[in-house]
Amino acid sequence: MKILTSNYITCAVKACKSSTLSFPLHFQDAELVQEEVDFNAEFIVGILPRIEWDALIVTAAELGFTNLPAQKPEPTEEAPLGEQVLKDLHKLLLETQVTEGKLVCGNCQHIYNIHQGIANFLLPNHLV
Amino acid sequence: MPLLPTPDTRHVDFDKIYEPSEDSYLLLDTLSSDSETKFLHDRFPAQTASPVVLEVGTGSGVVLSFLTTNSTAIFGHDSILTLGIDVSMPANLATRETVSRNNPRGFYLDSLTGNLTTPLRDGSVDMLVFNPPYVPTAELPILPGEEDEDTGRELDLLALTYAGGPDGMVTTDRLLDMLERVLSEDRGVAYVLLCAQNKPEAVAERLRLGGYGEKGVRWKVEKVGTSGKKAGWEVLGIWRIWR
Image (cartoon, rainbow over all chains, first blue to last red):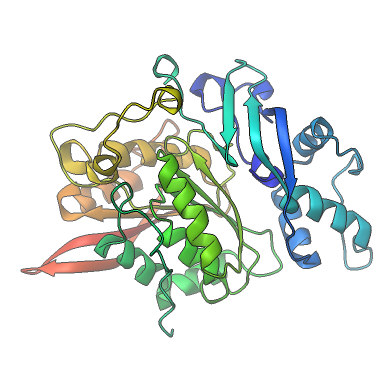
């Protein structure tokens, strides 16, 4: 599972949707793999508005990436983003994958397993 | 628009996974039609925030792969993020393989194992595509649960791909209830396939009147693709649902 994906998912338990603790889910025992993707600066600029930055900072720090700016970059024509920031984001968001591990809800503590890079959000019957 | 290539799915095991059929091809034709490419070009212009495109129930991945491969023709640019979800792990592995074999241009994020849109964050999806289990049946097959990962309980995964319960609408109704939560406020749009036995006109009217979900959003609804004309009846239709 790619790190960018973790920015779009939350706990599957309905009662957790209203809790701020259910997002982002927290990685545990994550095995990371880097898979090369062609770098495209425009593409990174396009996905910035679709990212919840505070959640990304939390996720990144949990996985050992601590070089993200504290505030979401707001590139303009006069002040475009520096190449290094774009490359850091590219590496973290698109190239870093979790192949095995767990995602844990900070509200209900439910654990979602990741196998072969695919996270399983099916719930046990008593939680559906 | 010139005919766009249909993704190659020859590697998929169709004993476990739904084989691309008339309904899948109707989705491909509709999403690449002049009316829908115009709608999607206008809705998600280049140089604006990249849309997150979610397909629910990807099966072989033929539809998600089609969108990812043909993003330039369909959206006018390749800055799209595609994501699949299916209750079946074999379908998710197949979808990942299908996308990677068919020269993706847009960016394929992942496939997730899950029940409809339950793990998606509120407002995170800009475009949703759903080819549901729409065939009317007496009851729904058992859905896989988390336990099945360990027990290896034999489930009828193929029945899950088509059996829709009474009116064929049990699963689709649940998905339509979720739209108001998961689709982005400003740009969200869904494409849902319905068959004649689903009473599609009544479903559309209920959507327009705010009869789905808790907030009761009054959706715009339009039929944008049809196939399988039988004695003057359109058997399958693609419905565009948007704010």
